[in-house]
Length: 301
Image 1: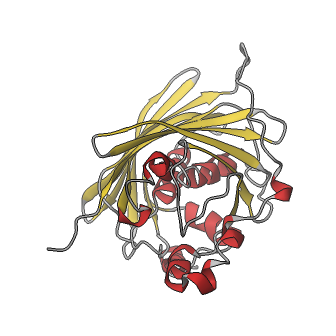
Image 2 (image 1 turned 90 degrees about the vertical axis):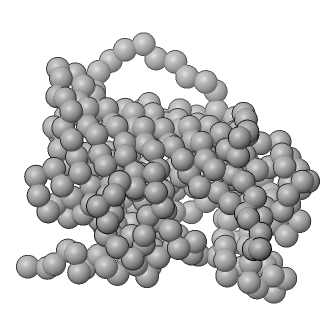
């Protein structure tokens, strides 16, 4: 029998293919309501928040009846995760009702909680239906990926290129161009097309877990746009504090989705951001809200 703990240790060094992402989100069950996951070696040397969101949702799903699907998830990032150690997910089966199921999940390292979340799951039911209109933006086919947009840095700023250039199993194509060498003050809005680099199985739960993973990209940085005339983005420290998601309608994470992001406020060393996700047909499939730490790094004394 293959030792899953040993098998998944490879994620400490790589996260480039879709297969690696799916296996990263698939946790090892070590006891009733207790699961274990690994981390990949992020360039910033801390556990990626989207990874914890996706793994926590997977852990909760492992205890939920098969006819119920997540409609909302609320989480708090408590401590920075250590990429060198596994993460244990402890699921509390709060309630199984007639239509809704509630779960609480705590992610633990070194005996301490690094993340906790609550998620609600619902039977598929019919009801009233309306949504806002998708923004009018260029289609993804005519846009460059974020990785392609970094190519000029290879010769102009090689160290910066190494810091930002890390292949991912999800492709992002920004609508608005952003000069990373000379960032300018701009309104706190961003639109990004994204999808997985390859097909996923017809598994609704997996598509939701992948979306949870991807939803942590691009959000918090949007809050810095109005301040680029006052501070260099490299001087800022970002860290997610909380993250909430609502899943409105069915979607596929392996087909193009538009992430429409805005930041209504920044104050108290925190940036507040919101995001709506639409499919190619303009259907609103999910919404997110996140607040995060956003402050100048302390200069060495």
